[in-house]
Image 1 (cartoon, rainbow, N blue to C red):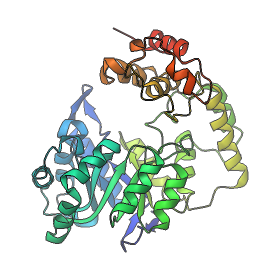
Image 2 (image 1 turned 30 degrees about the vertical axis):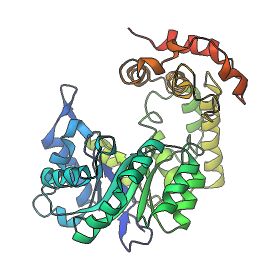
Image 3 (image 1 turned 45 degrees about the vertical axis):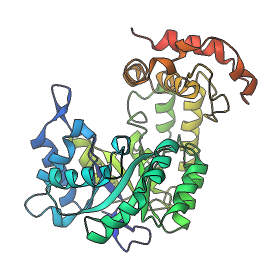
Length: 379
């Protein structure tokens, strides 16, 4: 296992962190974790040198933290750094900070959390952090020892990311980053910005939710096959992230023992700046080929927002693109029909045309939204 210094914390962290949001489950029921197998996987990873375990309040309908606590019995707690996250969307008043933190300590059955994150910060939730004075609550939790280091996970635009980084003496942050998302959310610029400030940087979604490894289009596989050193799509994606020296560790949500064994093996070989120029060019070609499969050339600049009808235009286009780029229908259909509010769906467009006057890509948004709904609706 390879280790890297974690920002200015003084900690040496394994470059592979065990993400606990995709445990094996029973009968396809998200909340029913196959505890025996999940614990076996976690302990295998720890025995092989993984020393960072990441969970969160909502994972597996609240059961992930409980299973993590069981896995860390028998001396395993002392072998790892434990991370979990405050469910920011549930925090309505200042006292909720302590309510949820104390509940999490009980669920995991531990007296302290090594790395505690404010979960899924975006513009609205950051305003809530400031309005409720939650940074003072972080200070208090650090002082009384319930948490050792304070950080945040991020899901918004670069300018906000920099604002949050500069607003508090954070120890670390967590961002989405992979070879398809170099300029998405915090992106490369945010990665470098945080690292330069001395923050430990954790990468989530290195495989884009598994989309870079599942149902690989033939055109993509043909490019991978050209490589002199043969690697799986997962290994290429992980190595691309680890090639950046600013990345301290990446989280992999492992769902079975085979993935765990593979990821641990890769993490023993993936040094920063170890990919050759030819290999980086190969990855760029894969990226370019994926981009050619896009149906809508939306860059998520959000110039089209706010929509008078509250349609989330960039989100609709992302789900539509994912449907064709990654040949993964289930995720796009589920996100559109189950999780996206009806008011934000493509079908709520009244064709006023305001968005098209603002789009720098000159996308025929009204017509494309019709195609989005036609392709994704299942109701």
